Length: 338
Image 1 (cartoon, rainbow, N blue to C red):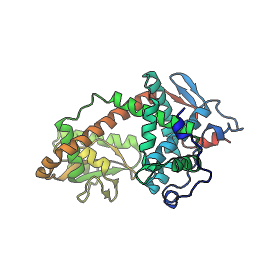
Image 2 (image 1 turned 180 degrees about the vertical axis):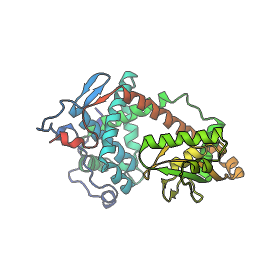
Image 3 (image 1 turned 135 degrees about the vertical axis):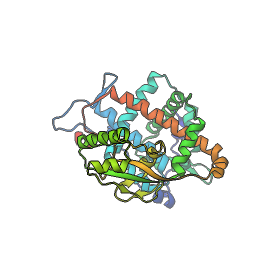
Image 4 (image 1 turned 90 degrees about the vertical axis):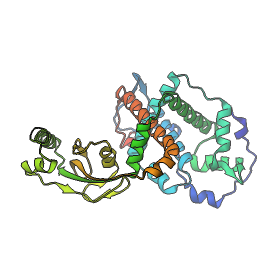
């Protein structure tokens, strides 16, 4: 027990106005406040490592995810609300947390009490006038997180265990100069693309994509000429960067991510967008400022390393997910509870 955080030395809680403003009462629900729905349905949520995951375990994981998000975004109320109100997003995170927690146990990751104490004492949510305030701590736990101290401490312990697991798995990941350059290009270069947009019929799009590549390789046609042979009209965008919204297509980030890796006159694979399925070639590229890159390279190397680690961990988790099975709909999980 972490007795330091369980003292009941305040008879009347003070309502700090600033705290109420930045942290609305997103009460966390866990297994204590839920029961199984009376409607017919699965008797367990799914299987992880061939072991059944109960509905109580899933509810507890969902509560831990909500707590984790509040700890990280308590001072960004709009983002906080968008996360907590996204049911499918929260359900997916809760399931992934269960998968990762079981891996942390398999790796025998341990988090000592002192690490939990240090995290809580240093968290800005529980600080006032530059130091930890036990009154704010107890107020937030009771009124905003809906957790008793013991439960909250175990959520923190598991959060720290998952962080340790991530660090362990990604410890050998390195960012090469090529990784840094590619990432910098992605964030700083601008592109125009010539593209064809198909309907959502993937099979039709795949057939056209194959034909266009054949015309370009065998007949040495340009992308536009190859499309014309199939009576497909190409369109060209204005110059855009990673953070832009491209008219007729949507967010530019996925396009830029592919554009920086294409060779001259090479066409992309098929890309799923909100508007349909498209393929493109880069028709114009505005490069980055090389002198600026030299000045920012050291700091950007850290960002490139973090991005590479995140991609590694995403793939690791996807592989773990393939070995699990779900019995419930993560987009509407609360229908299984009463």
